[in-house]
Image (cartoon, rainbow, N blue to C red; front, side, top):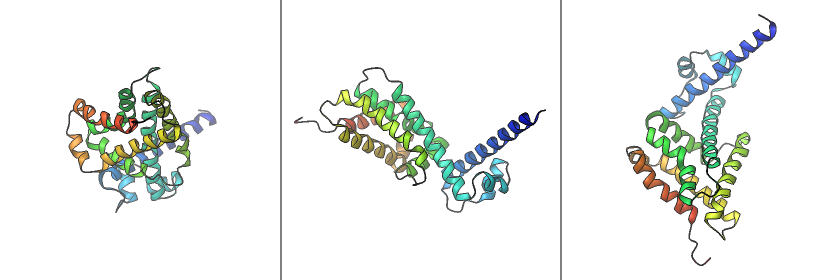
Length: 211
């Protein structure tokens, strides 16, 4: 085995350890939050050692932030993919369905998927200042939504469309965290979409009377 091959194997093993630590941290955070969470619990679940946390992340706090950031990135990626997959002239209902899709799927799945989404929603409301890496993805998701929204609400300027998309995103986060989230998670996915998508569409539509 060449030196390059050995280096590649070490790099792959290191990435697996890093990914395993993030997954274990996110699972435990979703179960009960960061209060009382220990490095030992995370490393036991991940099958790693405490030194690996220091090597890959530096601290327990940095590991937890990295795990949640990674989950939030996956949420944004799913939202961007759904919006990008819309046709050339989607209806307002289709835009709302794509925008709310990742949250709807989390409610429908329930269990750990919903617990993770609640963790993401809690932080997504006010991301830490150090998460500048996700700024471009937040902006991409916002611009994609505005692009497909604009033809459905003629006469509404970009600033107001940005405000409406932020309100819709905030509402989805609140639903994940509020007691009503447990009620929504008990619904069949068809009923969940039937109730939730029109509400998101309404946030996008706003009150356009008099325009």
